Structures are given as C-alpha cells and as structure tokens.
Image (cartoon, rainbow, N blue to C red; front, side, top):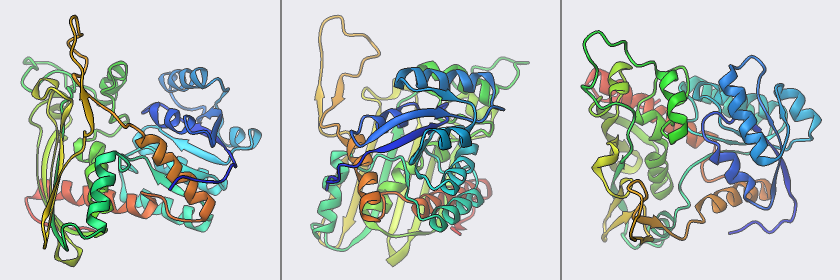
Amino acid sequence: MRSSSGDTFRFAALSAVKHGYVPMGVAAHPRFTPVVVADDADQGDWVHERNQQLADELGVPYIQDVERAVSDYDVQVAVISSQAERHCDLSVRAAEAGLHIVQDKPMSTSVSECDRVIEAVERNYVKFMMWNRNFMPALLQAREAVRSGAVGVPYAIHVDFYFASDAGPHKGSAKPGDAPIDWLEYQKEAHATGRDGGVGLEPMGELKIEGIYPLAYIQMLLGADVQRVFARTASHFHQVNVDNNVEDLASVTLEMEHGILGSLSIGRIGKASHPDGGLIKIWVMGSEGALAINESKPEAGVYYRGQPAGEARNQRVAGEGDYLLVDDFANAIDTDGDTILDARAGRAISATVEAALESGRTGSPVTVT
C-alpha cells in the first residue's frame, strides 16, 4: 500500500562513504527532501571527500558537525551510510535527536551495538528501517503466494545468494614476501568500481556484508526466528579475503521456530562465474507444494553490436523496489506501524550472522542469542 499523506520529510544524510545509493534512493521519493549531508569532523579526508561529493550531487550543504546540522536544518529523518562499525552509533545519536532512521547494512559488526539502537529507537518512539531488497517483484509475488496458502504450511526454505563480483586479485595471486592487502585501503580503492561493500576498519566477509539480504527474505516469507545454526565458511576466491581471514563463501543450516528448516549458500564468486551478476534463487517447501523464485525476474535480454563487455545482457525491469521500500518507511511514520525490516529484525539477522561465523570457526552448531 502506498502512503496517502502529502507531508514531506526533511532528511540528513549522516555520512555517505559506503553506499551513496541509499540516500539517493530516499531522495528519489517525492515525500523525502534532502537538506544536508553531515558527518563528524574527526573523520579522515577520504570520508569528507565522499560526503562532499554526495552533497554536491544532492545540491545541499555539507556540515562537519552532525548535531549542529540536525538542529540548524530542521531535520526529521536520518539516512545513515557510514563505515559499518559507525552505523549504530550514528543511529543512536539520530534516535536521541528524535529522528526517524534509514540505515545501510549491515546493522552493525557487533550485536551489542544493535541492542543500543533498539533501546534508543523504542525509548524515543522513532521508526527504524534497514535498507533491504524485499520489495523486488519476485519477492512480493512469493510473499503473496505463501500468505495465500499456495504451498500449504511451509516447512523448509533454501536461498542461494551468489554475487558474480570480483574483490581484487584472485586467491593465490600473492607473491612470496607480498604484504597482506590492507582491508580499508582496498575498500577505498574499490569505491570507483562499486566493489566497496565492506567499508570499515574491521574486515568483513560475505555473511556480514550481504547476509542481511537472504536472511531478510527468509524472515519476510516465513516470519520465523532462527534458533540454531551450523555453518561452513571459506576464503575461496579472493586474496583480500584470504589476507584478512574473512569468508567469501559460506553455507549455513538454519533451525527455526515451528520446526522449520532452512539453508543458505552465499558467496562473492567472481565476475567471470555468471553472465548476469550472480545466481540468487529461493525455494520454499510446504505441505501442499513448493515455490521456486528467481530474484532477478522480471528481466529483459539486451544484445547489440558493439555492446561493452562489462554491460549486463539481462537487465531487470519493473524496478520499483527502492521506491516501494521508502514508501513503506513513510507509511510506518504516518500510521505508527512497523517497517519492513525494523531494528529488532535487523538485530535478529546480525545475531544469526554472528552465530554462523562462530559455527564456521568452531565446526559446531551454535544457538542464536
């Protein structure tokens, strides 16, 4: 359902070093007006440069003082896309200022930080939404099919979430004596190519960087909490992951509420591995039938003479997902309802990822807490 109110919301982009597309996606909705980009003055030059670029693109000022920007520009909403380890601190500060919050993923690199956000959001009666992909057409159709009882009572789900994207030199390319690749410096260099999904001081593997997406699909389709996990992780494709001891490939088994079983395979598998950017599919098994969902559908094939090698041949259509996501956020503010992925759901995903990483390290099942 689309929001009916005509009220508009003034928003501040609180840091934009990670994904400029999040504040740009919010700005594309007619009910949200960007008024300022802001960050803390003690951030590095590279942070200020990226923030200034976004401010120039949005046509708003850049202020190196978060609290002053929020006060001076009469802000109602914060859109946060900072380094991952700063996400929750900025969200807590925004909530304490009475702002509704759209936050980039991952929610945090620490579950305890997620708890701080939940406390601040609920105490200040503000809305929180993690950026996600749940409003893609195939996911919406799948949700309707599950809710209508098309497969009966769901008892199992599997998600393949493979990104055909490179992350620097391939595994095994390092020469004897080469220094390990510095995580943050690599992310800075990767920014121009869009491969900098794990921006921050702390190295992050695919479960932390991208795990929110498939786990959010599972949460939306089945509405069941994950109780226990068993995982296998590997640094299989990319030297930057090997050097920083983080996974680029993982499999996770999920024991969920109501006896539901789930499984997840995730990886950044290299650009040459798939013609369309990756394999992302979902299977839901129920007492009366099953669903097989291709996340990329609907799409159109585009082929022509002289087509650049890097251009996608199959391109998604019906791409209203970001608009619908922001519309859902506006509706939650209007109606005092829940967002599609609120702070508690984001915390549950972070806890599942943390348990999966522990399981991958220990080789044993881990309870999600």
